[in-house]
Length: 153
Image (cartoon, rainbow, N blue to C red; front, side, top):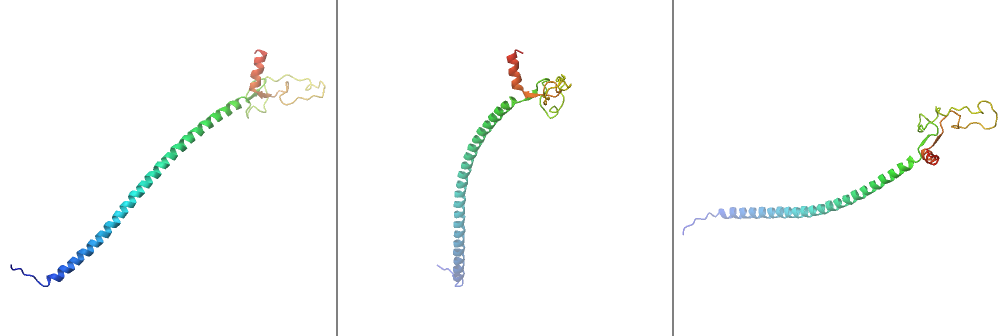
């Protein structure tokens, strides 16, 4: 069989084989780094999924606790408002509610002239809101309601 072999082809084949082997080793290293990166990313994904699930669970617990606390605050606020309502003040004579505009004004129904104002003598002087002083006398509204029921009004 007649084959012609060029003696210069052997070194070129040898160089090409070495080049391919080096490229193969480099490609293997790149593939190994890629595999490590993929493994790291998969582990990181699992860790983040667990952390997200834990955070979601904690958020749900916190939301539940916050809703419970808000309900307690609403209940306490309602109770406080009811207690404050018991201490609303209104004028004994004209029933005007206590406010900034009514606190130091004259009452249209407290106009009796007291004998001390006419010089009738005596050592007692009228106090703010006394009958005949002309001023409002503010009292808690719950007392007025209870005195009305006692008086039959």
